[in-house]
Amino acid sequence: MSIRDTLLANVTTSLSGSSVSVSSELPWNSGQRPLYEKNMKHFYLSEASLDITQNQITLDRNDVFQTETQLTAFVSVDAKNQPTDISTVISAVLNSKNSVSDQYIMECNGTTEIVEDRITYQFDYRFVKIN
Image (cartoon, rainbow, N blue to C red):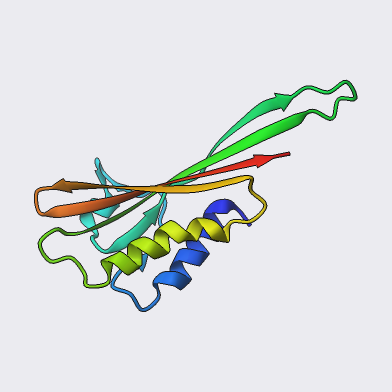
């Protein structure tokens, strides 16, 4: 199971019964506009971007590699009338990083942006595996 699939499954379970639904749509743009701006109270998760670098070179050719996986998620809500459970939603999304196993580093940072009457929560996931 991919990291994106694991995160989506965990967030879907965590947010069931909340005011935010989870979308697995890709691509998540409609024309020039991201779907998370158009469909508020929907969680959208990007495709994973991978970066594989050689960490250590060994004489026996069993080199050590570092795989870094990054994903970005978005949720937009009405800035004036935010859902009453928004703090629970944010906590669940941030904590979903713990559902991905076999990783050396599991991080998720959240930022917010207010544009017009919409507040957008952005979550940046970063996973590092040494193999």
